[in-house]
Length: 198
Length: 425
Ligand SMILES: Cc1cc2nc3c(=O)[nH]c(=O)nc-3n(C[C@H](O)[C@H](O)[C@H](O)COP(=O)(O)OP(=O)(O)OC[C@H]3O[C@@H](n4cnc5c(N)ncnc54)[C@H](O)[C@@H]3O)c2cc1C
Image 1: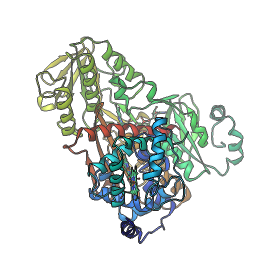
Image 2 (image 1 turned 60 degrees about the vertical axis):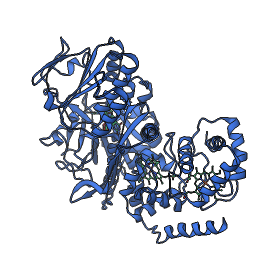
Image 3 (image 1 turned 60 degrees about the horizontal axis):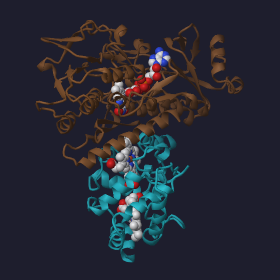
Image 4 (image 1 turned 45 degrees about the vertical axis):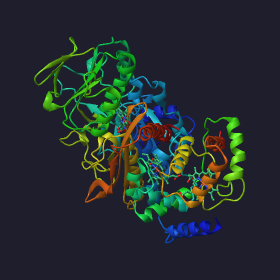
């Protein structure tokens, strides 16, 4: 596990090399403004399905864009849209969205499921997707992420439909499923949704 | 404020009470941007100019107190959404210090750099953005004009027209026919008429299964055609005897020639058809106020980098009214063009060069409550024209799971919530 974590870290670090943060304000906005009508102001979606990308880990943002661009990671619209941007532009956007504070909007969740989800999260997921405690650079904070999107991603992982998922996540999920029912994944989703804002 | 005529000053003062004092003191240094039309493009341009430079004063001239989005209005017509859910007002613009004048702009004087308002007032500008959407060519169809829209709606501008069409569908009998006629391209929202036909078919399937919707099309092909037809086959029995929907292209007599409102009959080149509900979508051109900015096509030619009119200096045209290379006339295009234009206007007022534009469009269409499809593109200016960037253009795959189609409906609604949030919150 530790070895895998370092191997993954190396891949991710590679993606961040040559980071050019030298774009001017108008240049940055010319790029990121095109995403807002789908992903919400500065990447925080009020729409209930499009993923929040505000505050996304830079390396994971780049990986997501590149994997959808190449078609390795399944997507609906993003495969087409990611093609329109150069590697350097993707880095510039990753840097911008990483710096945005996530404004999380209220979602409909079940309080009891969320409570069970919290316990499961602390046991199985918090080691990487740290919600309480110091930020992990390798994995996203899942707090407030849109429920349909979480459900969609986890289903993809379980069905082996996304070959780009990191071995860390894949193993963690296997470990979880081996010890819990698949339905209890739903508790986790309700827990993340419960962390949304007012 | 110094550059407003006295009567307009009073009108504006009433609309923006509280900020008037502020503007009076700073009027000498503030540059004025005036925007005609507070729709999908106009409001967004206003907000992005204010965001880029709070020293620029922005005034929107809008003829209506409320805005009904055309996007998702087909869901209202089909009965899966309320009219209230697509109705918005401009109250929040004050949070951005954007002035709004509720009036119809009646003329533009490029030499005096003034916009004339209905009633005789006028507004001066340093830069003018014209974003009035579309108007209809009422001379194109024999027997159909604007006096008939309460009996035979177009519903191609949302609001009361949307309700007229929705009510007519509810009132008709099971077994009655609905006819939609589609004008030649280009028109607002290329996949829109086919989405409408789909959602009317869905309404009929649930409520009037002996009825049928007939699409008379002036175009031989249409946007996302294969995907629409797949949806029609799966959901509405298309190409079977009991199909709820029929599509008639021009080579099979689909081209509309005349309408007889009294008998509710349409005439094509070689036949005539009667229906209980007629939805005539007339041919379109740029909004009336932009008439002097149009070319022979009826739309406004622009500098493809800046959206400045090719015909008049310091006047910019965005949204459906402009000719933006290969971009379709959609709300997402309008939104994206507004942001580029905001940068162009700000750069021009500062006397600096603007950066290279990047634009995006996505059009979702709801074929059924669980069947969504999309087409997307990223655009850049190449050889002076807005063109697809690096091959980034495409639509939903023809082979896709039911889950995939369903997820696109959720994403379409999500886009709707975010784009209207950006406009009105
Ligand atoms: C049925 C239907 C479905 C659609 N679905 C989609 C969709 O799913 N996705 C999508 O992206 N697009 C969709 N569209 C297209 C979208 O509605 C338009 O492309 C978009 O609204 C264009 O924006 P605009 O700013 O150019 O014009 P508009 O949004 O129409 O705004 C123009 C504004 O200017 C005002 N105005 C005009 N003239 C004057 C004047 N002289 N003085 C003062 N005010 C004036 C009008 O009152 C209006 O508020 C759809 C359209 C239709 C008809």
